[in-house]
Every structure is written in C-alpha cells, then in structure tokens.
Image (tube, rainbow, N blue to C red; front, side, top):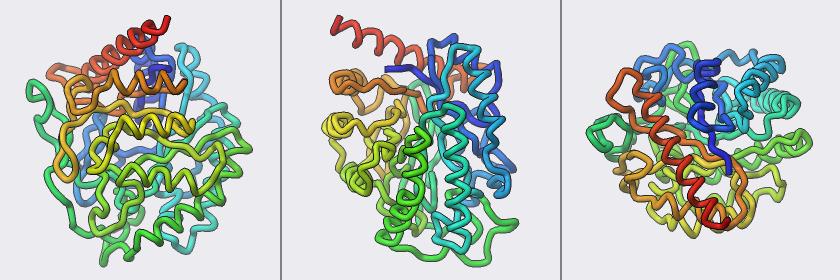
Length: 358
C-alpha cells in the first residue's frame, strides 16, 4: 500500500509537493476543479463546505483539461518522488447535463471522453467521480474534534431545495434561480449513471484509466430534495454490477461509508477488496451516523483503522490511501498540521502492519 496526499487545484505547486514528500508520501490525488472560485464560505487550504448557495462558481465549460497541464503536473510531482495516482472529480461545468439529463448531455459526454484520453496519455491511472445532483451538501463546521479542533459534520437533515443554476453544489449559471432543480427519481438517476458508464467506460478502459465512484457524502437517501445513489454500502455493489469492466471501480471513502446507517464497514471492505474494485482509499474517521455525525482525528473515531488496514493487506490491496481531509489544528498552518498528524499516523500504521507479516 502507498501513502498519498490529496491536493486542491491551488495547491499543485512545489511547496505542497515538498510537504507531501517530507511526510513520507509517494503518491498524490489531485483536484482539477477550483472549489474556491468566487466562493463566499470556503477558506482556501481547507476543505470546501460552502452554504446553501454552493461552494462557488464552476469552471469554463469550453476549457477542457489540457494535455500539457496534465503532463506538467506529472513531471513536477515526479521530481519530488511522487506519482499522480488519480484526479478527483469532474467540474460541474463539464458534465452538469450528464447529471441532469439535459440538452448538452451528448456533447458533454464526448468532452469527458476527450479528457479521459488525455488523462491516460499523461500516465494518470484513475479519475474519481461523485455522481450526485446536490453534491457534498448539508455539512456544518465546528469545534468537533479532540481539543476543540475545527472539523466538519452534520447536525440534521437538509431539505432546502437546490436553486436552478446550482449543480453538484457549484454554480453553473450566471445567476441562481428563479425556480429550482428539475425533479428526479432514484430510478432516473441510476439510469443517468448507467448512460455515463456505458458511454465512458470503454474509452477509460482503452486509455488505461479507472473511473472510481465516491459514495454519497453525506450518505442520505435524499438531500435538498434530490435522490442519492450510494447511501448504503450494498448500493456500491449495484454500481459495480452495472459493468464488468475493470475500469469500473470505487473511490472508497471510509468516512462516508461509516456514516451509513446499515454499514458493517469491515465486511464491506473485505468484500470490495476481494473483488479488486477499490481504486484508492479516503482514510477518514468519524463519530456517529447520518443525519448527525462529526469528523474526528484519524485515531479517535468509530472506525478501527488498524483493522481496516489489516483487511486491505490480507486482500492484497496495493493502492493509495490518502487522509482526504482532517481537523484543523491550532497553529499558524492549520491545514498542514492536520495533514501532518494524519499522515504520520498512517505512515506508522502502514509500517507496523506490513512488518507483522515479515
């Protein structure tokens, strides 16, 4: 198993690459989406949470991921001994009508295929995605973690409707409203996902790229009046069963899975690792279940993290584990300190459990 770090778009520089290498990482999971673009409630350097009006403005729908930029990031990371293991999330500007089944769906699917080919040509083996209408919504921020460290959580259901022009928690139109997102059923959302996988998986497989699905965050059956796809662990199996392609894989978020009301996380991890469907792991700990949970430091939540690593080891998992996000620590560099704590714990855990079999 490999230790990795997730970096946002504004963090793809030599300073953050050095930080990752110094913490013992050998891999990066990077974001091409700018979640802090015109955002009112997000602090650059921390994870985005936003408010009911979203994280900020989506990108330029005509500006696809450029081959030169992808190759440059791979080259610069390699100088620090780091591989780019995955890109996480498509920009809503590039696929909002894929999610909504809108008029530009066919055009946007072709654009996604183009980006997948470019990702593969750059030598990046995975794209994580979250097939969701409301996106990551309904989270709160507070002093939830040990020592009153700032973290995120959820303090009850969020039923406020999604205004028109907001998709996947980002603004894709010049203004929001009037009106709200068109209604959709669970069955319709699954059909849209199947259309996406049917169209893109063959290109991904030919390009040597996995498409790795994130579970819903937070994992509620509905949020903001929209249906969710993977809000219970068995629904991951439903997603896998849509296509036997080896590129149809999972972005395995331990925190989101642990928040599910019906999840036996250890049995699920064993099952999906046995099927070799886990692309990479979000190594995040939480306390509680939806609709009320809190993120914790990686060593203090409900999840027995050493047990998870032993299961992954025993099933032959060779992929990357990243902290995803972490509580902010009380110092001049709260993001760096929180990540350094998580990475130090993870590095020691990986070394210890690997040595158990030696």
